[in-house]
View 1 (cartoon, helix red, strand yellow):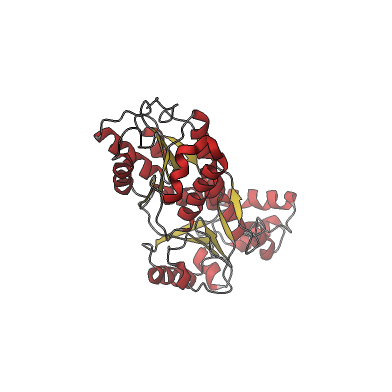
View 2: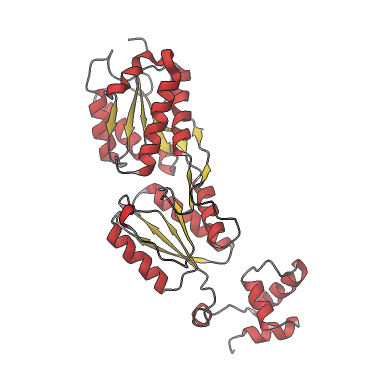
Length: 340
C-alpha cells in the first residue's frame, strides 16, 4: 500500500494543502469544525507527516531541543520527562542534550540543536552561563537557572524556602541549620536568601538562630547525596545544646544524605532532629522515614516552557520571569523539638 500524502487528505477534506498544514501545526486561524473534519480524515487515512520533508521546505520540524546540565540529577530527569509529555500533547518530540554544567559544551549542544532545525530550545544554563552567547532568531526559554536578559521560567525558590523555614518555626524550632547549594548557583543563592529572610523576619522568636550572622549553622554543599551527608556531619558535630534541632537542605538529595549522617551519629529523626528537603522529587517519598520537602511544581514549569516555545503562551518579559509557587509535602521527618 502506497504512503498517503497531504494532497489526498486535502482532496477528501475539500480544502487546500495549506489548510491541512495549518491544522497539523495547530494554527489558531483554523475553525473548530474544520479542524475536527480534517483531523478525522487524517485519522481515517492513517496519514503521518514526514518531518524531514517539512524541515527541508523550511517549515516547523516539530522538534524541541532541551539542554540540561546533568541527566543523573533526579530534578532534571523529571523536568525532561514533564517537558516530553507537554510537547507530545502538542504533537512535538524532544531532543535532550547534556552540557555537563560546562559553558563550552553547552554552546556546542545549542549549535547542534540549531543545525537540526529545532523549533525552539528549553535551556537550563550551566552555572558559568555568563560566558554563553545564545543565537538570535531561535525561540529559547531559560528554565530554573534564570539569566538576565532572557525569558525565564522557574520555581519561586526564595519564597519556597521561606515557606519551609516558617513550617519549622511553627513547630517550635529555634536552632535551624541550613545546607545551601553551591555559591555560584543562581537557585542556590535564591534559596539561601529565602532562609536568611525567614530567620530575620522571625525576629526574637528565633533568637538562637540569630547567630546566623556569623553563619555557624550554614553549610555550603553541592546538591548531591554525598555533599549533603558531609554537610550534615559538619552541622551535627557539636554539643547537643548547640547543634541544630532542625536542618533545612536545599535539595532532597542533600536532605537524604543528611538523614544518613544523623543515622550514623545515632540521632533519631524526627525525635531529636527534624530534616526538611527541597525539590519534591519522587525519591523523597521513598525514604524511611518519608522526607518532608518543599515541592517545586516541575510539571507546571515544563508545560509553561513548552507553551512559550510553541507560542501557546505569551513569553515572560526579559526582566520579569514567570515564577511558580512551591508547596510543602508533609512527610515524617519534621516534628516539634525535644527540650535540651
